[in-house]
Amino acid sequence: MTTHPVVSLAKTTRPSRVSISPRESRLLDEQAFDLFRAQAQPDLKGLILVCTGAMDAILCEIDDFSLLDRRIAHTVDLVREHPELLSSALEARVANDERRGVASAYGQRGTFARCGYQMSSPRMGAGTCTFSNGAEYQVHIGS
Image (cartoon, rainbow, N blue to C red; front, side, top):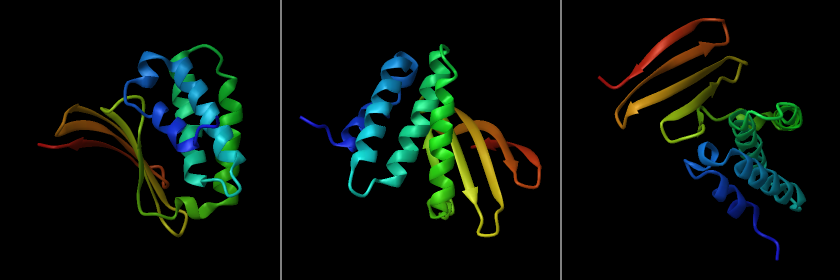
């Protein structure tokens, strides 16, 4: 019985999955990636999510970093072939657990901002934002 790729993706995105079992998370991401690609019309955002999820798992696994090469190449290819995936004002995804995250904003003229942050409580956190012009700022969330 074939699992729907969204089901496999959901299994990998539980907040603690990567930190508890990075290898299992990576394998589930690989399964979801293959299922997404096998679709008649692949879900492109799903493909990007499983690629970046697999990269998180590979980094947490601290075993074979050469596994990153394939996922980075797939992600770059997807973004080059489908730049509209980055056309929204803000794309965010949770990285590793529910307290750490990455947020990226892209402008229509090629400008961008990328922020990494860690929440210390549900309403407070800190991080760093880097902009396409090279500027880097410390950010604080909450008061």
